[in-house]
Length: 105
Image: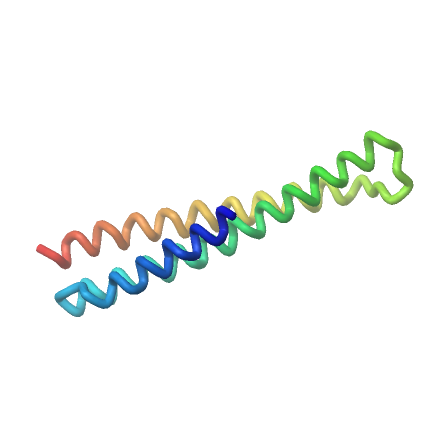
């Protein structure tokens, strides 16, 4: 699955960081990898909320009695929070990469 491939890639990144010199650049790289791990958690949450939203909408359209109109808004609000976190972490990651490049020079 995509999650397993991503996990494997992050593991490779974490291992590759160990060979980075100078130590200051290594530390920056570790921080960047850590941010990406956090980002993945938020993407997984986003995906789960999206799945819940689709299920809720399906219930609405088949007139299922378990349908709750508040659920749609709750899922959308949760998805928006996760999106904001993903964007914030991604911005921080890009700043770390720039800092990493400067540390190597």
